[in-house]
Image 1: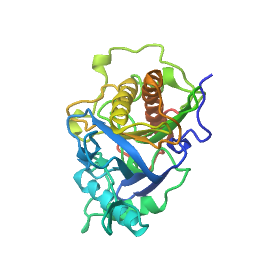
Image 2 (image 1 turned 135 degrees about the horizontal axis):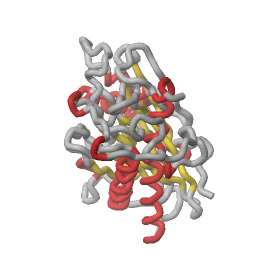
Image 3 (image 1 turned 90 degrees about the vertical axis):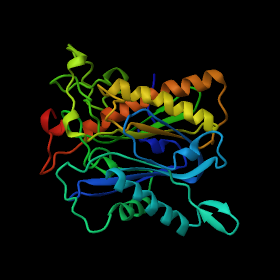
Length: 329
C-alpha cells in the first residue's frame, strides 16, 4: 500500500527544512526550502507569465551544480527580493558558493501575484527581504500548511489558495516530497462541490477523504479568475535520490503533471507556473526504471500537495473568496 512519510511534508526528505514568514496585514508571505548542505536542483517553467530569479543557472550546462536554498514568495516582482534576505542569512552562516575568499549563496526563487487580494500594499520599503530572512530563520522539519508563508494571500477561481505539502515513500526506499503555493487562475475543486480534482491520488483522508465527484460537468466551463490577472502556482518537488541537474530538470517537468491533475485549467498564459526540483543525493542514483518511477511519484505528490493547500486554508477577515473549510468543512 502506498504510504506517506511520517510528516506527510516535503521535509520527509532527510536533510531538508522549510521556513515560513507572513504578514497578515500585507496578506502575503515567503516560504523557503533550505538544505543542511547544498543540493542539486533543476527547474521547469510552463506558465505564460513567470517571475523568477537565478533560474538560468539551473540549466545542466551551467558551472554551478548545487544551490543553498529555494524561495517561493508572494508579492509579484517585489517578492523576488525575498531571496536577497535569504542570501543575507545564509552568508551570515558561512554558506555559499566559494569564490576565493568570498562566499555567494545560490538562492533561486519564484513568485506569485497577490498584489490585489485586499492586503495593505502601501509600503514605504519593500517588505519581502525581511520576510525572506525571517522565513530562513524559522526553518525546521515541521511547518504549517494552508494560510501560511507564500500561500498566505493566495486564491483560486472559487476558493482560497494556500501553501501545501505532501510526501510518499517508494517501495525502492526513496522519498519524494512536494511543496506548492497555490494561487491558480483555475480551480482545485469540481464544479460547486467540495470534491478535489486530485481525489484519485489522495492517500488516506489527507484532504477530506471525499473521493471523486459523481459528476464532472463540462471541464471547458470550469471557473477562472482571468479578469483579475492575479495568478500563478509555484512549487518544489524533492527527493533523496542522487540525481544530476539534467535529471532534476526532468523531475520538475514530470511534477507539472501534478498541477494539471489538480487544477483546471492550469499552465495558462496568465499563470506563471514554475516548479523546482531538488535532490539531496542521500540515497543512490536510480536506474532508468527508477527515474521513471520518481517522475510518476513527483506528479502524484504534487497533485496531493495542491489539494492539501486548499483543504487547509483558514477563513480570515477580509477574504475575497471563501476558504474550503468555511464553505464545506
